[in-house]
Amino acid sequence: MIKIRYLAAWFVLLAVAMVNGATRDFTYGRYLSELHANQVSCVIGIILFAVVIRHYVRRWPPQSARQAWGIGLFWMALTVAFEFLFFHYAAGHPWSELLANYDIVHGRLWPFILLWVAVAPFVFYRFAGRRR
Image (cartoon, rainbow, N blue to C red):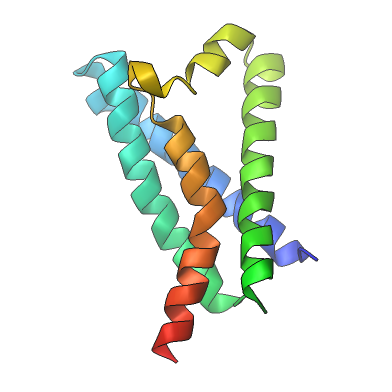
């Protein structure tokens, strides 16, 4: 079962993602192509998420590998739901634009962020287990 504290941690991930996006839009995004700015932002996002996820896995260690996977998949599902629901219904982005973020063939790295969010709790759970 996913505990409420992991939902709270996801909101921290959401805040980090928003700050990362705003930083892209107001700084280096002005000097790079949209695709390159997006790629840089994705790499930075993966690094920032690693810091946050590692913190929460150390603070509230999952009880098992299964729970670590559950946390990651829960966070990934929330992220996808937020992306589609918020950016379509609140921000007005068309579905085609949202789906284009999943096009790895054309250089989009967003799926790697989702993959990282899904696997990172397990990775840090395993890493912490080896240190004990």
